[in-house]
Image (cartoon, rainbow, N blue to C red; front, side, top):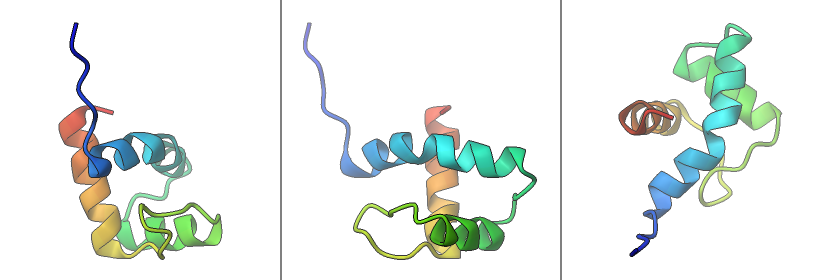
Length: 68
């Protein structure tokens, strides 16, 4: 059986899925509010930067596509 490595964006999305789902359960659903909450909680981005609305929106789209 050959195992394929996940691409960096997919691997990061998979690691951040729990944080995003937790925020959604708390009622934080907009990308802007989610970015603010992720920054306040110290959740790192792929390159240890700050979360922005576009970054969150790409992450959420990727999670939806991966069904995570």
